[in-house]
Image 1 (cartoon, rainbow over the protein chains, first blue to last red):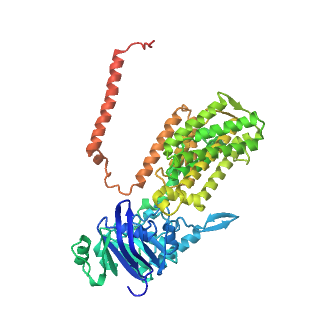
Image 2: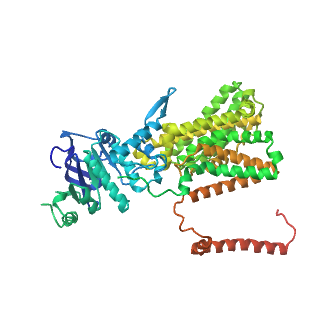
Image 3: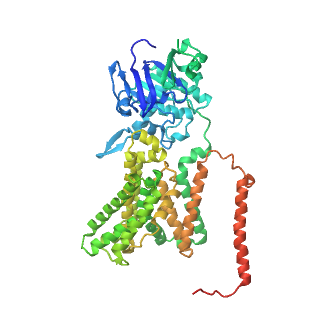
Length: 253
Length: 373
């Protein structure tokens, strides 16, 4: 971590909504095989920051570099095409579709049948099983049930699998991945994040839970009132210090 | 991590995927058993079974299309008028302008699709809610049908039209049944193996997520209404052929009958859950029920009562089955202990009491009815 070059880096990012300055001169860098946690109070600019990182918003000022080359995104699809994707808090899953159908939603595989293009459900199911097993180590009891019948952690796995299905995925942003989960499911989701890290992905996690942050992250980026209050290495800091940075009673050394 | 074995599934959870099919099947069996006991001779005659299928066939194409509309959280109340208007125009083209039957029928299908397209645009572009939008368009289409046809009954059509409506193409299967079944098979393929079918479920299940995934939500909703319009027009042609006559006031209750069949078949009014097989079962169930009422010589007007009751019971049943947590509603006595329910019970008693007391007083006072004026 910290060694080598970042996959993506943001420099001097400013974002204004009308007269409101949501982000003021923020830097951020994501390295392969590293989990970067973003913490901060409500309204500190965490969401705005990752929305700029994933192409949903465009910065008012500042520049983004991908592999140290200038990089501009005009929408979320640009981000996905360049290997950057996000798993949102509400997971964006269609509950009535099966896990495989959700994995390929909006990007279905097709086959030609008598000149007519039909969905290739069999191949999609096989690939979904493979992605879940090989990349995430998850085996669902049945792939033919609606996703709503799965547990919170399994649904999380389906949402993550949708992002990692693309072999060229390099940066995965996760917004509050454990917010809606019980203790057991939280542990499983944290394991998933560790698995992704060992596969060389840059994982960026937004979280309110400092316990989770200290368990999985390598570095912690603290946002406070639209500015970066500091970036610390997880191994070299304490819960109290990070908390102090979040509320503004301490500054990074 | 291994996420296998999250406690064994309960029976209802494992049965859930089949409920849509089992529900109507159980009701169909119940009707068969009942009629087998009460009136076997007339109900199970071959000609009567043929009649049931013939009645059901009319609703099959519309039930197929309505399955898509309802699965997307939509509803189409205009189908009766779409059927009437498109077949009135077809009738005029044939009778007054000498169009060949096949081209007039195809034009009617196109007109139906066009009316569906208008419905879809009203809903997606003008942002009029489905219920209000199609209810208003129902008035518009019915009005046009009345404007065009006045009070005329157009009758006596070429053989092709009557063949579509009541022919016996196969020895035992009437032509409309064959047409209906083909549309249902087509609908099944559409639902399982096309983008449209997949996105229909996704949109009904989670519209926001579908939008985020890049699905053209509004376009696919319009598609469903176009399909619905075309199928309503097809039903209009079948009805024209079946009666060998058509008028502007034909097909008044298509909408509720079809919605009932689809909902009874297990397609969820809350979106996301679709069952084409269930819709077929629902259509058969309603036709068998209505036929049973006729066979039992129960007055025609009771059909409306029966259809309404069936809709309420099936929706209530599916809602109850959907509910995962039934702890709160354990016993009947607990229901009555709830203060809100007690107040409702008091109000029910009050209203019923008022009606009864007023009736008794009126009976005691008695007297002739003196019409005013």
